[in-house]
Image (cartoon, rainbow, N blue to C red; front, side):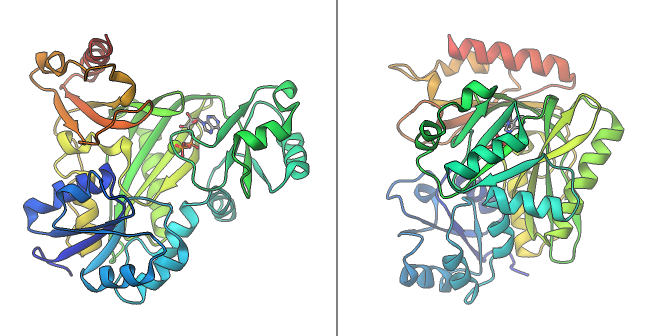
Length: 379
Ligand SMILES: Nc1ncnc2c1ncn2[C@@H]1O[C@H](COP(=O)(O)OP(=O)(O)O)[C@@H](O)[C@H]1O
Ligand SMILES: [Mg+2]
């Protein structure tokens, strides 16, 4: 067990790292951020900060020796680097979990081999095999680069035969990837996610299911507890916990689902770390996902996960900045609204700059209020 006072090393300097620090600091933990960027939102508030490349083995070794355990907030860390680190200091979740979740084909192969419900898929490594894969899957479908994709980046939806008339152009748009996955497009009535924590003893605790709305493939809002039947809620929790057990996750596992017209839950993807759709837990739950991750990786007992008030979380993207920042004063018209800005500097289109959460005992009031506040911010 790593008790408060211990030092946690985090690979990655983004907002998830920042929020881990913000959750663990009141409990007495110290944080060492390792990332390649000189300026980062997590690095700026860390106790110790190392700026080095993820392939810099000397820097990685110094980092590993300076902390009691290591976790990550960013998934694209090379396996060799993780293996090197894990020889010196425990990494949670384990290297093999990240290895599976950071690569769409390995992730889908894992889901299929363990018989979890997932989309039909084929993979391709060249133009020839791409054409074959699309023929097998049919339309509509979506091509995704196997590695390095996030927020819909590295994805192209294929609506019909016409959309693949020029595979070379598609390949170029995707930046000549080593490998792509072609998936059937699932017509769904909703997208949901569960953030589940698991510790070394195999204890598990799931946060309430969140209902997620995406705009242009980027998460726009999360509503929790999701207004779905107890049966579907139970099923989503069971699937997430079975996945966490099968992968032997120590830490958090976030699982994204599609809910089909006939109420089947299909696993879309997994992330072994805090997840954007779990940000509502900071303001709405007894324990936040960030504190829970720290509890799980340090070996503390897991915290209570239920919501004290239903919540709607809305992402604030760089798109909302014009020459000036959005008018924050609109948000505070509602006294329950909680604003979280990540202090990221330049506001670019699609860049996650912050989020806000509206709390209300009545979930549909919270949803209406959150949308109204978002529109005012946009205006
Ligand atoms: N096979 C699919 N069927 C239907 N919608 C999809 C499919 N794949 C992706 N999407 C849509 O695109 C979003 C982003 O895709 P996802 O695979 O979750 O990648 P990432 O979140 O890593 O960018 C999903 O949340 C969903 O809205
Ligand atoms: Mg996703």
